[in-house]
Length: 524
Image (cartoon, rainbow, N blue to C red; front, top):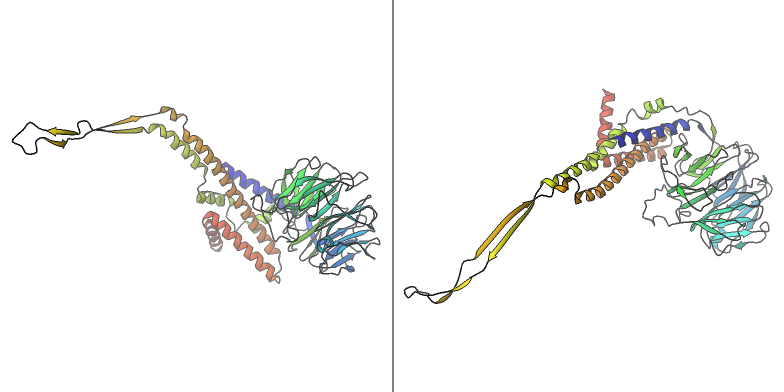
């Protein structure tokens, strides 16, 4: 019972803290009907200059999104814009990794040249780019290519990385920069500007470990492995992060060892990418939300953001957040526009909901995993000493089984071999082992079964918590949608019904029963 109360309190505090923190984030649509952009880059010296990539076009704004214009049209069968990069030490240079090669502009996007084109279709599909003082690195669907003469010639890194899919490339910066890249085969590190590489994390194919992967509409071209993105802390080069389909991992020793960050508060484990602010804040982007890692938990900061499926995430020099999604390009600035409070949330979204503690108890009762069950097992095992061991013996005496009948002249059948009577003996004994009052073999079996029961109960509680608060989040998103957006509202309503059915499934219909009772009380 204490576990149920503690779990309820912690989840409730987490949600309240997240909502209150979300009140500090207001979202402004700066996309001007430029929908479903796949990449974004903000000038490090002037955050009014922004480049965005969508469906074969690179767009630019000089006034922080008030107006946009096309500066490059990428042609070809695959013209997707996968990455846009502006080196911090040169505000005029822009790199664009596209499905038809690597482009560069040295005039702030006004004139472009293609500086890399692969020999095969896979090599031509550039997915990531990094420019350092020593070299230019371009990642493709078929490996890593490096140029040490400003893009005039390229060579492929053959040995360590091979022809794997390159997901993104990062650097610590400076003359002695370490370069990190995320690939389909793992995470690699180079300390000599790409001359040699060391694999510091091995990637596993999705589902290969038997662990369930929590995914929302995965992007098929990228989902070749569980790794999604790698990020290095430029203020502390020992700190390294990567996101994956199983959550976010951190290394405090440049990749020698890794620890997984908690998933607590992270509604979807499949983290597409991560960002680090100058104030050392860690952000995570999933297909449906943005999360801030603080005090050993994740807090969602995308309340009120109706962007559809989220694609890309970046920060500017003032740590403002930029997000691209299905419905446009969004920017956040610190403020209290949303003005979420605990009282308003309680009154708005929890007045029609049963208490989560009641749902947890209903789920535990339905699954028969209550703690009292273990105590009853131990009591019953202790009573075993009072039950006697019963031994029953049966003995058949076959002596003189066959004998001769003789000595009489008047009776028929004399002097013949006859079968005699059998002699059967039996006995019964009772015995007690009073040492079983202290310990018996059944206790060992109970210890194993109780461990499994506790794990099952914790899994059920965790599932109830996630479904309950995910349903509240969907209700909030549904309220923020315009009435004209019928398709999106229909999808959210379907999601709401799906979560309701899931809660009913693990509580034996208790959730819907309570919803009906609460609705009747409000009508009366």
